[in-house]
Every structure is written in structure tokens, then in C-alpha cells.
Length: 108
Image (cartoon, rainbow, N blue to C red; front, side, top):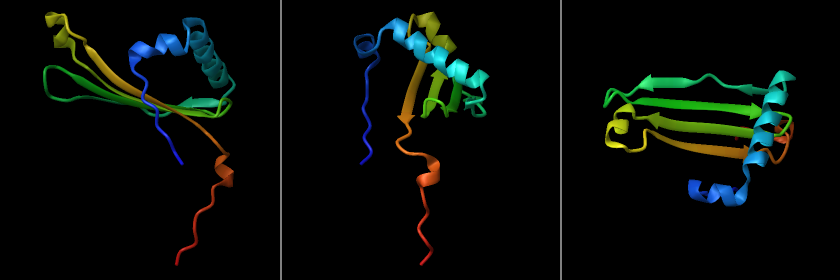
């Protein structure tokens, strides 16, 4: 059964320290240098409201068996009101089994 765990940003420092986070990012960049990880095309569009932008990006690290996506918005006019100018949601999925083991059902 698939499970989704929502982790509030404020809880992240309790779950992973900065050194471990940098190590994980460095491992993905190293995998990219070896052509074992890749980014997918990025969607970045103006949404036509308050000069805001929407972005969606993702990638797959074959070496670490991790698929990740990030969707978010950039609200530059929020800076004038001292409010957050970015909103985003990131999702990481650990591959449980190789894709080659997944089989489709025969048509009935």
C-alpha cells in the first residue's frame, strides 16, 4: 500500500541536519555527472495575476532510486508586504522495485 507522509517545513531540521542534506544533494549531482540521474523539462509560466510565476520540475536519480517533483509559485509583490514570496511543495518517492519488474495486465 502506498503511503504519503506530510512533513511541515518547521519539522525538517529535526529530521535531517544541514550536513546530511548537502551530502544528499551532492550525491545527486555526482549521479548526474555520471549520467545516472536526470532532470525533466521544466514548466515555468506567468499565471497572469500579481506578476506571479508557476513552476513545475522533476527528476529521477537512477543511482539512488529516487524520483522527485516540485511545484511552486513565486509571488514577487508579496515582498512589498513583507510576506513570503515563494510557495512550494516537494515530493520525493523512493523506487521500491525496478521498473522492469512491473508488468501490465493483459487486455480482456
